Image 1 (cartoon, rainbow, N blue to C red):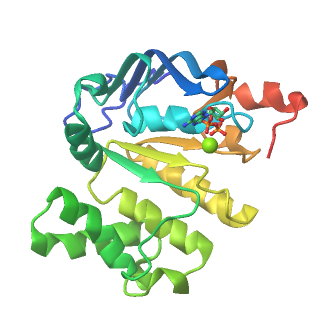
Image 2 (cartoon, helix red, strand yellow; image 1 turned 120 degrees about the vertical axis):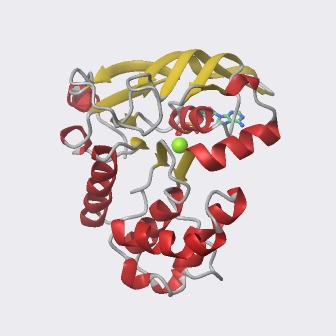
Length: 255
Ligand code: ADP
Ligand code: MG
């Protein structure tokens, strides 16, 4: 969906410049059987506050694409610009520092540190990046936990929470440093469908308040919730638009 009404989304960022701007991004993996093209000249532009879903069969390149946007992996060719920074130019250490401040990442299996409380898990990225003064970190963590609906779980250990609560905690941790961009690779893959719906809706609320959200998902009802669906097939953008998933249904979305 084009942002025709041009909301002034992320504070500070040049109003309607894309948060994600990929140009001819290709990724080839060298394998014993030869070179394998995981991403084939992807062009993708995502505006501030957009809620985008990436769908596609297993092996279509979804995780590879997310990793390019996160600066976890580098393209073989093409340009990756995120929030105005050209990631191609950054060294590994600069990239790691950049990522900690600018991107929040959520995974399928939550990956909370089991020996830390929920609040401590959320404080950790603030400690790593020294983004906020020490005395502000816990109050900020509690604010974010409140925002994702689990303030009452702050001082518990992850293992005592339900899967949905743990994923909310992981989302809170991803928000710790106030990123312009939230990336989630199959965040509902380990949740029952009702809990999954609530997580999908939580992301919608975050996008509505200005955070750009990109999720990889198999959820079939996603097209009615997100602004835009990008369908990947064999490393290429097969479809891109609000109704993309529906046109693909008869092909049988894998799940
Ligand atoms: P998806 O997330 O859509 O399931 P991926 O992005 O993980 O797909 O992978 C896309 C393709 O690239 C798959 O065929 C996968 O086997 C291949 N691939 C991913 N990572 C590597 C790697 N490190 N080396 C070789 N092939 C890889
Ligand atoms: Mg994947």
